[in-house]
Image (tube, rainbow, N blue to C red; front, side, top):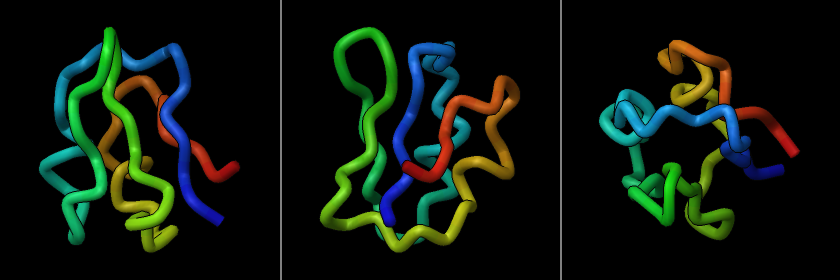
Length: 56
């Protein structure tokens, strides 16, 4: 199951740099994860300072 970034996102970009498949991109007001590309590895959640990415 893909991860999703909540509205708690502060747009720091830490998650995008950690994604091994480049599934995370800056969206409208927060970063967004492409669910089709997400490997469900949790790398994004491990580096997020506010805990915004979470498994759906």
